[in-house]
Image 1 (cartoon, one colour):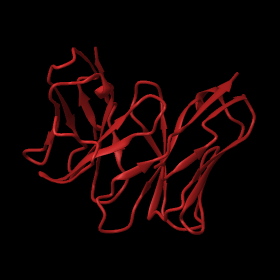
Image 2 (spheres, helix red, strand yellow):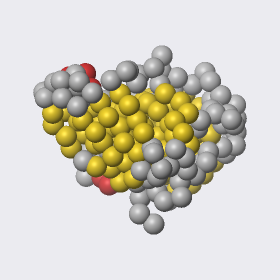
Image 3 (tube, chains in turn blue, yellow):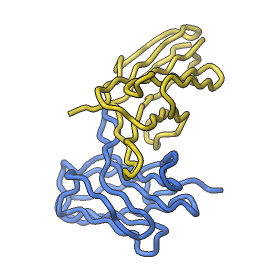
Image 4 (cartoon, chains in turn purple, green):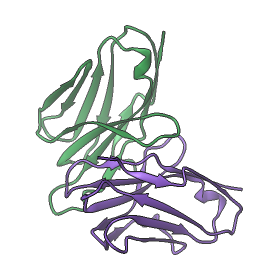
Length: 112
Length: 113
């Protein structure tokens, strides 16, 4: 059983550009979460999917952020018109129901 | 508002010493998870505690969930350099919730050989 995978691992972009990250959860995990982690802090919840339905979004998720999980398997997180404040580690986690969450390696975003 | 407070935030000790990390909240959690994270990587799950007063052991690591399910501790016996990393506690709220985790700010542990 492979773990949660994320792509890319690192992304450097210029302010104003759009970026998209992908997360592949553990197979048969119906729940998928996105978190954001800045240096020296714990991860903060962004959004959550149960199968293909996006059921909760944090206030941290501005209008420039959008997430999808079209077939209930992999998910994408897009950030439009990136700002320097978007620089962070974006983490994806999956779980089977309300059980333990397993995290991927993360995507490190740097906005210059 | 930080719902989960971890202490200490930084800890630097010598190999062989014991240590305890605390995770405190004024809120009740249905379960609490401990993760360890290395630089540039995602958090790796160590343990989940769900019952008030529960104690779980993982080799040299002992985890305890408070009776009221508001706090937890992680005790490491005879720390080794391989224990170095960021330790995170994360709480989940009750049933019917999304299951989203609320994280503490983490404890950075450095074990010197």
